[in-house]
Image 1 (cartoon, rainbow, N blue to C red):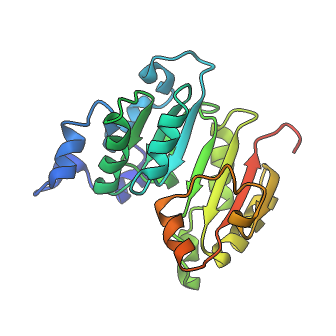
Image 2: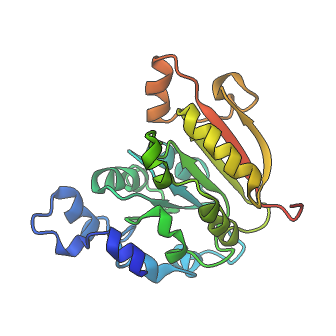
Length: 233
């Protein structure tokens, strides 16, 4: 594990009073869920972990939350593999449990900090990446903590195969404006974006996440962007 990740993550095995979700990570769900010490050991070996060929798609969801989208994606695309990254124990277990209980075999999840994504994957090991409703860090002094940064996109670009996409959603217009500037300046090709996903060309194919439904009930638009790793940059 990198020094940065060590500084930002408390080791699961060192927690003095582990709750049921911590115990599930270390025990019942350990075949599919990896703590911050085990997860980096799979760098470059995810297809071996899934027992699939070298050309088999392996996608990533960053920040799975309570796992509704994670479960939907894994179970609706059984011919693709899916890795999730989540820091909090409860949503981490909720996410992988949704797949395992439906007998899905194509999903794994890691307790890790997404900013340290290079610890988990080798160059060109990933296919598509989903980033839905990351923390917007609205205050000016906290925007430096936003996940979408130029350096982070450079790292993802290196980790993805050609032809792979990033799918980004947020309810924060301020964050979306910020992200669009970073996207346009990145190595990715912008395929399109919308300030109102549910009244756009992508609405029909969109899976409504738990967070999304809450925002929609309040009449708030969802912002969406789609990027492509292309040779044409």
